[in-house]
Length: 209
Image 1: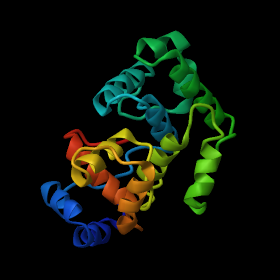
Image 2: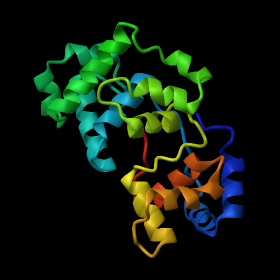
Image 3: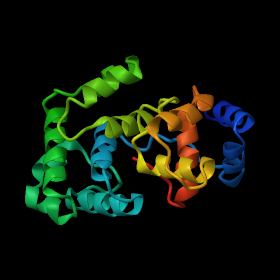
Image 4: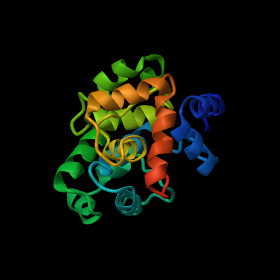
């Protein structure tokens, strides 16, 4: 599912910001698409913490295969059915294995009810998610962007975004978070869209969760 705001957002950003105008021309077909259910999105985001997009995809593919999945999705009960050692054999650290199993248990027992999130604002969803073991603000922001398709998320702690802003706006020098936020003010209310273009400028592999 491509969000209905995408084209208007991309045109607005291109009009306001010459960097994003160039990136849109270079990558005319990128967009957010909801590719997975809530559990898969969160489990993949945990998998991707502090590793490259390519490495995260490889590890997740192994997890899906170990759980008997046939696509990139894997249901929470399938994770719980796996021995923790099997998860670690897929390339997950012991801590990430524990986090994903805990997440799966909370989906299975109803502690997490993702349908509620669609009616909540961004910060309320983030507050609920970060209460789950292994989910910090970055992971919650990835969920907002890639599952709920929220248009105005700015993941300032993301290294890829920091590097892209340094490259395109500050001659390669990393900016302080307050300065990054200042640059991003012109992108509102489409900061998720701007972030995706900036990520893609660094990596030919599309970011997805």
